[in-house]
Image (cartoon, rainbow, N blue to C red; front, side, top):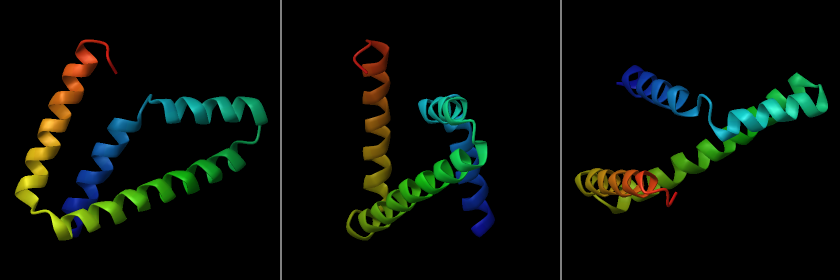
Length: 90
């Protein structure tokens, strides 16, 4: 089960993060400071902290709200975001 969760999360995040504003910000920082290792380490630490917060909040929510409800709420939220993006609101 560990590998299924690991590979699913890895695949989802690597696809979601390619070409996003975080990657563009990292590129800009490397161009500005010309210190790729410092930028890499800082970006890695920042993303690890943000991911850790997401894991902690997710774990907390799953102890309160049943999984079936979370799946439905997440699905509705993604549909709403898609509609808002379609109409240029987001």
